[in-house]
Amino acid sequence: MISSKPAEAILDHDHLEDVDGAIYVAVGNRHLPNAAVAYLKYVPTARRTLWCRGGTCFERVVRRYGASYVLGAVRGLQEEVYDPSLGVTVPIVRFSRVRTVYRPRERLAEVLRRPRDPVELDVAEAYAVLRSCSGVSPGSVGVDGSVLVGIHNPEVSDVDLVVYGCRDSVEVATTAHQAFGRLPAEVEVRRLRAMSEVYGLPPEVMATISPPYKRLYLAGRREVNIMFSADTPGRYGERVLVPLAVAEALIEVEGGDCRSLYYPGEARVSKTIDLRVERSLAQVAPPPGGVGLVLNYESLYSYVLFRGGTVRARGVLALDRTSDTLVLVVGTREAWSYVVPKDLTEPS
Image (cartoon, rainbow, N blue to C red; front, side, top):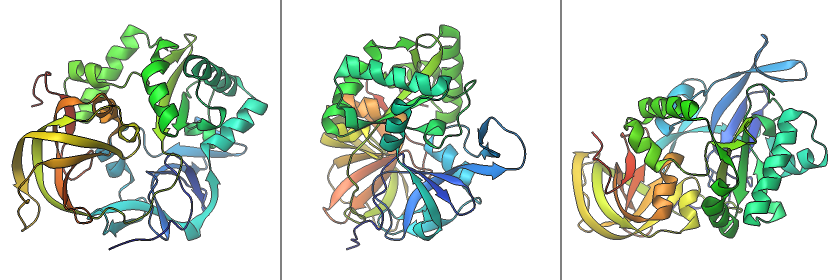
């Protein structure tokens, strides 16, 4: 059994700046005892860029999202270690190298007290709109992205908000889209085409599964995205996965669970209708029985799992040694993954 309390209370979306000035984004709420699982997003540069703070500017390492793309972009630029609790390598930043931790809720409180530019004014307005439509608790929202670390640019920066805790996450996920506008149609078309290239799914499928709390529009002038996180750190090693095979499953998912909105998302499976093993990853064959849990590392698929129902999913089939449960892990670089409603055209 691998088990340890986190050395630092790092939550998903926290940003960490190392001693060289590089900025990382924490992934999830469970971290190694001596390091945070995090990907490198910005590195300091001598040239002028869109993202600057004082006299220091930053190059953006990750320019597109999608788990496999992010991990590919940072490979070779930061340290990776084998994580025995997941059975794969993960990107990290060691706590001994971290000099500053940026926390979204603390930063939002600072912005609300004294917004200093058009982006921060829009952050305050988006927060007010969110509270008016959902009744979210005042201390349950933070600001993410370039605003969090103070390198935002009024011309290009979006407003990224993080909602913490189960009750508020569910409320916001089901109501936020009613209070904001949508992106212009031509912008949405371009976005869906770009996402289709990243995820390998047709644009019409992307349009159907895209979460309604993403790509919102504030007063016709700035994009707003909403993300979710548990509000407490997890315990490293409470789940130990052994990857077994690449597989596709037709499953019935229990909807309405706030954990499916988090990162990684967790969705309980009530019934496995069909399970097809495509390629073995270990000498041990998967045990008989159905999938008990979907573990999702791709936020695009979170709303499909949150809605629940019958879905078709492809990913890495793993055995959780702590519970003897079969887990279908989606959104990793080990296999092309997807989660789509059953009634959509089968991915190809």
